[in-house]
Amino acid sequence: MDGPTPFSTDSARPESGRTQAAVEAGPLALHLAVVGLGYVGLVTAACLASLGHTVRGIEADPGRLSELQAGRIPFHEPGLADLVADGVESGRLSFWSADDVRTLAAEADIVFLAVGTHDGHGRWQTNTVQQAFLDVVPWVADETPIVIRSTLPPDYVPTAEMAIRRIRSEHRRAHVPVLLNPEFTREGLAIEDFMRPDRVVIGVLNDPAGVGETRLRELYAPFGAPILVMSGVDAGLAKLGSNLFLATKISFANELGRLCDAYDGDVASVMSAVGYDHRIGRPFLNAGLGFGGSCLPNQVTMTVEAATAIGSPAHLLAAVERINDEQPIRFARRLFDLTGRAEPRLALLGLTFKPDTDDMRDAPSIAVARELVALGARPVAYDPMSSARRRAAALVPGLEVVETLAEALASADGIGLVTEWEVFRRIDWKAARLLTEATIVLDGRNALDESAVTSAGFIYEGIGRRHLRHALLTEAIVETTLGATLEADHVAV
Image (cartoon, rainbow, N blue to C red; front, top):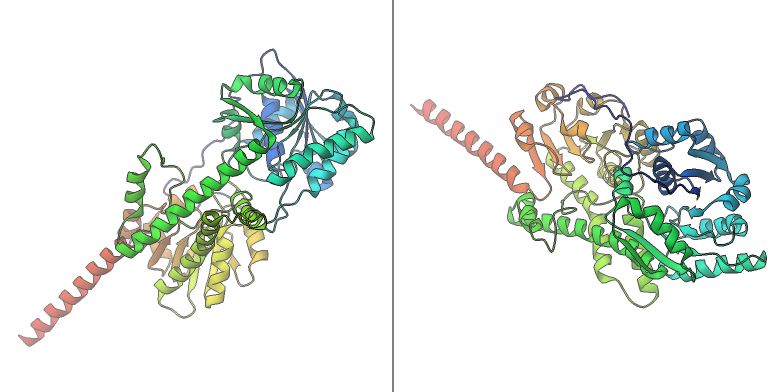
């Protein structure tokens, strides 16, 4: 990540330090193979190595493998680089080519499969899983559990077990335990979520002797979290259901934010009251630009389509998807309208779908920028992640991407917060006011200090908090009208 903004009220960046393991493996030290070193696989491998297990990560992509072997992490996740470095230095973590899978799978006590299962266009795909089965399954030692960490389409879960059974039979090998162990980690907090899970879910596809369940229970016992054992289908639906519910909460908050705009309410106050209800809870009830990333948008879309295909339409989830798709468009149009200009230059603060990641998959910023270009605006964006800046520039023709916050603000007619990076929360708005001609700040995450923004001379508006803008404009109109009246009276006298 790039350095701090010159407009930060606290320009010192915190020391990341070495990530400390939350638990220790104790007397249990296993040899583990993790196939697929994307986001889920690499976090799994690094965290398990930090607990004292010997982990061999296997990656089929030569480019990603060479990056990891050179000590470079292919994506940004706080604390992960340190955790990987510690694992490699200790000898507990190493990275291997798919050419070595035959030996590594045969030596492992557990083989984890963590390959991607969506096609990047909002659809399920299982080609990667099937290829992993062909590459790995024949060589796994008898009774060694194969544990799938990938998110599988619900209708494919039974097929996965049958495919593994068939491959073992074709190679004249005994069937092995097959389990589904979904992950529940959040980008930006993945290590914390892995090391201190709310629960561990184990789905049994084939484990007649209980060998796989026992080994996973032993592996996860030090975490002290509830271990829930269920069928493979139930485990897959539990993973999917968690994400679908979180998406629903976010779209609900945005729907209520629209009502607050209509009735001059404050969604922050409303959600604070709603969240105190223990049946509901406060997390994920934040109005804003909606959800993005690699999980929620794809899984909502895929579930809606799959449910329709089997004759059981998911009406609630279809509404969740529609609300989420509309939020960035509404934001872009509002930002455009607030400037009152035909071709405004609009500064977009943030590009990644959330802070503390470089992930641009389904980021709301892309829809915002495209809509602004379509309206005739000149959007200019800055994000602390250089990789995100490069990606956004390639995705949106007409979007200007700059290297510093100062460049984004200079000559802007309006400012929109898109991603609530801490560097934007700490902007010194009085210093920024000296740089930019913009008078409007539209807070797409309700993350900024409204009083700091307005005291610097900006007009602030949030999502579901339009009454704040109304109050400011009313005050300005009253002062202008009163001033004009007094001037007229003076002239008359």
